[in-house]
Image 1 (cartoon, rainbow, N blue to C red):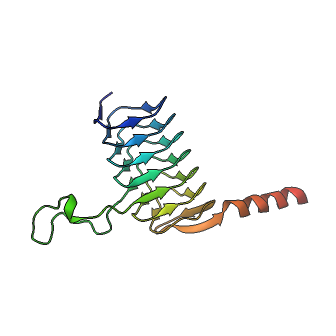
Image 2 (cartoon, rainbow, N blue to C red):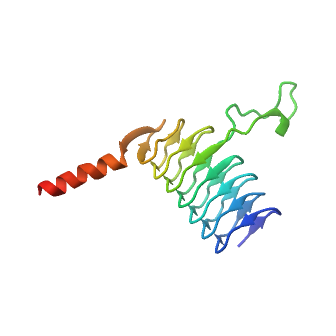
Image 3 (spheres, one colour):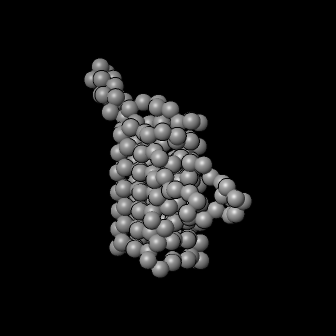
Length: 169
């Protein structure tokens, strides 16, 4: 198992980290599981009881609250206008761009190969379908999918509909 944990990483209790993981100046909460080939960059925060699946990239400025599932190969993007060079043709430095944060609220689930663009909030208990590209906020208790991600239904409405169906049987 190859992994690199750079100084200033704050690991909670009972954190499980699998091989080939890179962590940089981030926080990982209690009982969280980090799969193989994951990178979590500086100033990222992962809460308690989360599962971060393999091949996922969590960049600076991402906050993931407690009890969140992140599927395989999920990518978070923190730059609205990415460029290699600045206006005078030099490679960009941290001074040339601004981190645009992302917030994933408690209990949310993000399906495999989803891409989460900067500046969005994924609400509590929301579900992002596999392969989706999230370009705007996702309301709590909502299922979204597609490119760009669109609302399919609200979880509480589906629960009410299922209860009605069961009552009529």
